[in-house]
Length: 389
Image 1 (tube, rainbow, N blue to C red):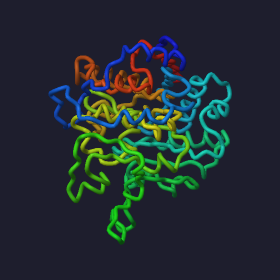
Image 2 (cartoon, rainbow, N blue to C red):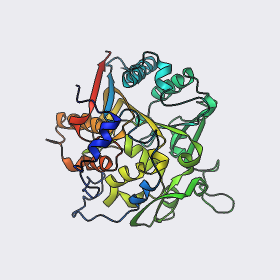
Image 3 (cartoon, rainbow, N blue to C red):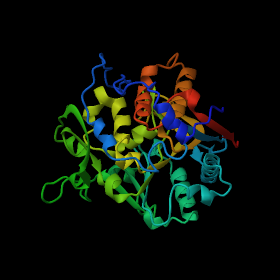
């Protein structure tokens, strides 16, 4: 499948036409959350995002509107991902995306020795449907082969506990730091001796997403939100610890839409997200990515679409697991998510879960395009498919 190439210059020119969906467009509700019945959206501070000038790394990155998709039916055997195949698929995707002939040169378009590189994985669904270790190890190996020191690589997510539960530990990844915003100590407590949340020490109150929705949580929930109120603070992991971010989401559904690149970044990088699901699920996916700590640091998205799910996501429901046998690479998270959305919806239609795509389900992508984060429209996205089965 090949569509019209879209250069970075042309991307910004088309954005100037004003033909995009407005940021207040309704988005599909998250699973288990009632759909919003009106178009009125709470106010947010999204206007603040543009106060920091863009730089050469800003979304949609070096290759707006381009997605390299590699497919291999040989990647999974006896329900296990074959690491050599994962490595090869990532290699093929990187070379196709960049047009380079040597893998080291492809990677060096995005990262350089001495930079702190954060790998944003997704362990939310547990061991059975996490970002696979085969994919993560393959990325690390290619980074090292490109001159990046292991000591400069950080594996991170919102919850350190979930990283550890899914095997992302410093024991399994020697020399690599594993970090999470929300943390427990060895006794299982979220609080230090002074009664302060460990998570509070990991947030940067100079960076926040404000929305006119109050977060009120009980004693059990608050450690997982870090704070209540109307502010969602960015993690210090993205504001202070890393120079570049490689986003490594897993291909899953969230109701009739997809939870992939942008959701992995947005909801994994800020606190107090429980309040945002009902009325601002889609807006949050786009808005949070528009702030500099993500907009200017996420240089690459590598989608782990080897195993995924088409229903019951973003949690783990084995009856809905499937092998998409896919790796995707791109700098444009919006284009990546559009193609991911099409893959998931096609599977849902095939399985008889829905009859057709609902434009409301992907409204967050149009919001993201209006914020100049990438290309949402399928006809403007160039998809290169490479089948190595």
